[in-house]
Image (cartoon, rainbow, N blue to C red; front, side):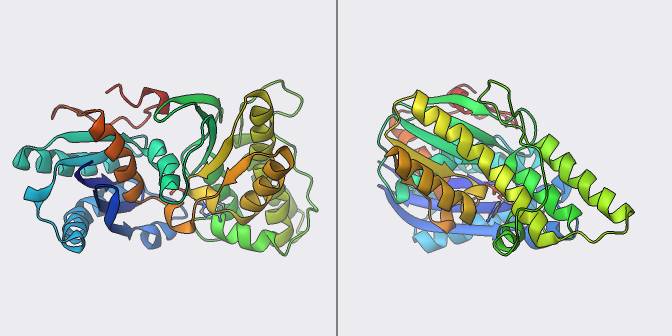
Length: 337
Ligand code: KG4
């Protein structure tokens, strides 16, 4: 165990956190959501610029809240990928500078491993475990037979589920990030629009969201061209049933195929109330324990990076100072950099 400063800057949150012997001493998050909302989605160049503006302040606040000085640190950890290339670079450069100045190891952390390990703040993993990773940039089912042993059993062939929520929200005139208003409006809507289920009839565990997104966009445009009003609540409900239904369907299949003791949700979309509800119902039917992360660790933060970093510190997974980011880093390659 050690004192570690963790940094996260993979998308639109600049975050820093300090952990000491398993105890979280600080967790500072500066979100850029209000800026990106104007554009209906994350603008990569603006994200990088805002990270550059905020990173030092966020790190300083994390250290002050933890009541530690940089000399007290045993290591500095940082998200190396996946994520937006320019955004990742800002966090990595900050971490490298601290590692170099204070002569401490640099720990490269996989962003999705972070989302998975965020659950460790509230539950104990029981292997074999299935992590259902649903976020703005990724959608995958990851089997873990032990700590840091990640096997990707299924993933999206194209868009991530969160990205699909955001694009559907945009065409419906709802604000970014789209998952939140869609989740809310779906509660009062009816499933009245017929949207095709992705990859239906195919013998695959893969997921796919780009067709569903296009279907909603075309349907909305067709209705508008005919001068008909789109019932936004009903569209949200119809869309959400299909989007979440696909994740649930794949999870049930994997749980039945592999002897899974526990299912955990991870990533931004795990904040979705319908997913949380339905997954609980279905896993209860199968007699499998389900763990749902508290809201605070669904969105990006550095506490989750710190949690993984502790394990990597014990294993001495340290990176040289010439390491670069990897926007497409796969979780099963977490120790290859
Ligand atoms: O994990 P995250 O911050 O993104 C990545 O790290 O990639 O998740 C952000 C995503 C956004 O697409 C947002 O629309 C979605 O999570 N999201 C939701 C909900 N809250 C956030 N999606 C569905 N339902 C929600 N309640």
